[in-house]
Image 1 (cartoon, one colour):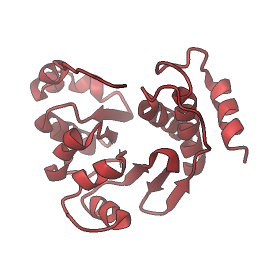
Image 2 (spheres, helix red, strand yellow):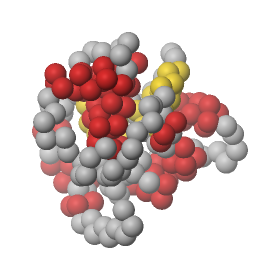
Image 3 (tube, one colour):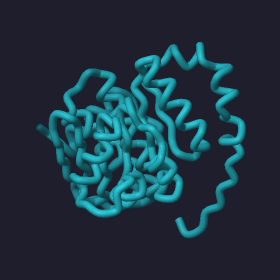
Length: 205
């Protein structure tokens, strides 16, 4: 991608008052996924709502600029945040420290899991109980559009299937790797069986 223009009016519509009118509908979901295109007040409302109703909230930072909205919000009870290395620094409210220090700081602020994306170096999942690092094989990238969303979708699928933390990471990586090798962001032939076949191609363990 060389040039992009984004005109997003959805964040104006997805206001606190609108979401309050849909509370009963939102309560029906076990897992809630949002990104930081939303207004900071709306993000905070969703965080508070998820904590109060015991929902697993996952936040995708999107970018350094947009992710920085999280720096001064109350993150208590957030199930997972998925920053890359630059977004992690923007979200943290401390200016110095290595990756583990920044992640620990987020965990102290109430985030249960921090999934740090590292591009061609793979990713690291930090939980309160363990740290899981997973590399990725070398591939020829055709188009990076949708790769981050694919990674999260693969991980969420594994998590909802009660797969191990490592297997969920492998599913996330595998789906992202496939999307990176096609034009566009959608694998039109994807189904449950093919996702596991893809995973076994990259991580045959």
